Length: 134
Image 1 (tube, rainbow, N blue to C red):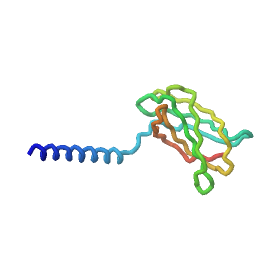
Image 2: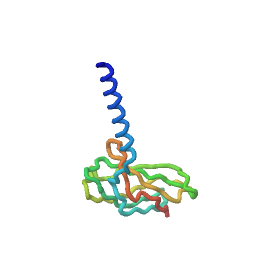
Image 3: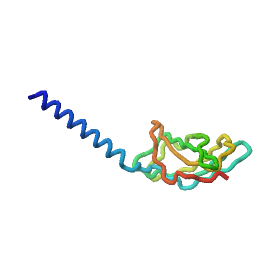
Image 4: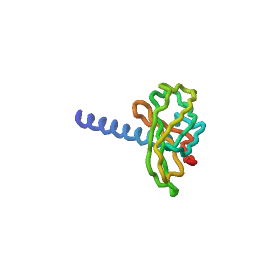
């Protein structure tokens, strides 16, 4: 009788954990970073990206790296390049500007933005694009 009770309790706990995991996966991802403004254009040495971002989350973002995914005409992904912002910590509500020089991507016409913190955790980005590459 004791073994049956232990087995039943174990199965119940596993089912509850699986249900909670499914529920967590259904929830929309929290957008902790907002793209306030961004522009990109080709220069002699590559692609210059200028912009401003804001921490819209409730916790500080440390070691924030921005990833830029470049796309061709048919929205076909070409490459992704990344760079770390100058601010070591971006506190909730704080804005910062960035200016990056990236390698040229000859067929690219647009790009999107993603972000990761210093612990390599994905950070949700609102208004992530696509943006035109001028």
